[in-house]
Length: 189
Image 1 (cartoon, helix red, strand yellow):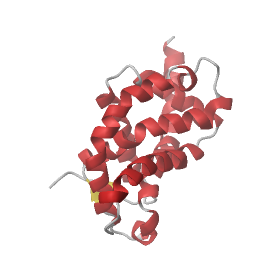
Image 2 (cartoon, rainbow, N blue to C red; image 1 turned 180 degrees about the vertical axis):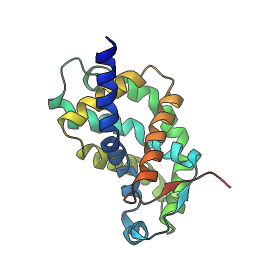
Image 3 (spheres, rainbow, N blue to C red; image 1 turned 135 degrees about the vertical axis):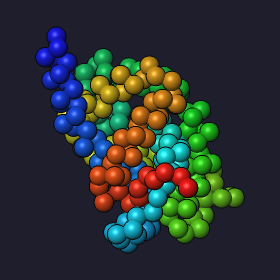
């Protein structure tokens, strides 16, 4: 019914700031070595395209981390238990494709010549996304797990590019609403 749909939308919108905060943990991982920069008035900017690249890079690992974190809080038919492997496989090509831009964004954002080129690149590529995903998932409680599962159930049928863009928009909103996110998403020059 219309009331039930309205209630579901209200519940989702009520949880959106919490989900945005959790998505913002992606940025926190990348800022680990620049905590002072995160606390300054002037947070660095990344473009919407760079934001999308970072999100696309992390998404498959985020699905895995949420599946692990939320296993006990979700029913047996939850997407995070039944269809998450298929979703991860659909997202992995985007993650691989996004890595070069995500890597450059992280290097520029951190402001230190992070050693993620050359021999360290494969280590960084395989370590950064799982670490960020684990940080994000740790912030989810049972209720947030249920909302995340419902959100993924609605977004999973979308092409991976669209799913990634929607999640990037959540992170963009989070960066605009919270000074705890160590960057902001700005229009490109």
